Length: 422
View 1 (tube, helix red, strand yellow):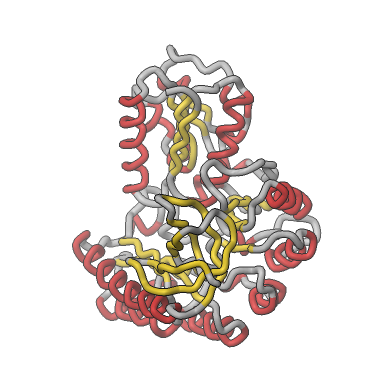
View 2: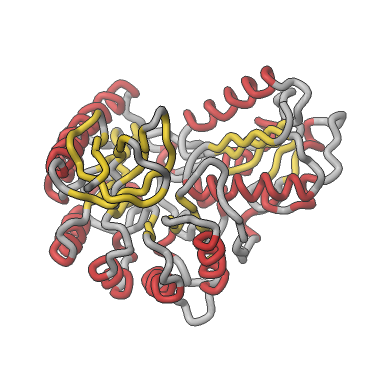
């Protein structure tokens, strides 16, 4: 292999940081490397990362493997003990040029590790990226870390405290990306609705969105990654309701639809809050659709409690679901609770996914016969592949990358098919 190979697991924030890692490695003179940016949300994510490391090393045995990300931050020894791995970097170190310098293939497992205390980090700098490899949608980091302690979640221990990128740096990055031809920007972070709490004047996510839309008039489409509905303030609600360039797709961190389970998860909202939020947004912007993260089989979840989560799909009007069977992460309070059998977690996940599939299909069917604006991201065999404003996947014959008007003609699998509008 010649050059860099980037393998990214997990969230959109990792997508941004993988690009930064590649740039920092090159700045340090490490031009040939396999860079693996790991995720720690589930045990399965960690297993997949280790598997990918072994496979990449088999394919390029003489290329150094650099491992960073959340799993590396939490369990650096686990990766340093792998003979395939040359360097292990924490979530702060992976973004620093100096961490990649003087890579020594002969060091011991302990000497491979460059991981410091993430809880001591108090600032997050903006990263000026020219673009993203093989992507036409750009991701911009506005925040990192989390100050909450949901009982199931290990990520605050991997990412550290919540810290925000100053508004000016965010806008500067977006102006650069738009100048380089990007037509859609996704704001990303660990807890983006906590944006600004640590900045002078405590500007909110809503204020940031309003500023971006005002100062970058040439940006056609602005999109939000996952948000926490209880942190949505009036400026953000106003932007969602009245700014057509802010896309009508909101992905919500809901996790459950039963109040007792939400309490045991240490979430800050009730079932009724989720339903009310979706209804309020839909009243202000009728075309909005909602995605949601939902966990099945959390410790102590009864059949009745699960039914409340299942019914939330219809009661809140959810369209796109990310469903996760509960995965106990060592070091979290939920891992010490009485666990449900794995088959029950998986069976409930399957039932919830079936409910979600029906909601998604109903929405896709409602789009047939409409005309939508589509961001074509790539082409394969003459077919343009992209997403609608509602983030529904769509295939369009003879469409080149960029934003085009499309007549939706059918549902195709989990997405849509269309043709260029006349």
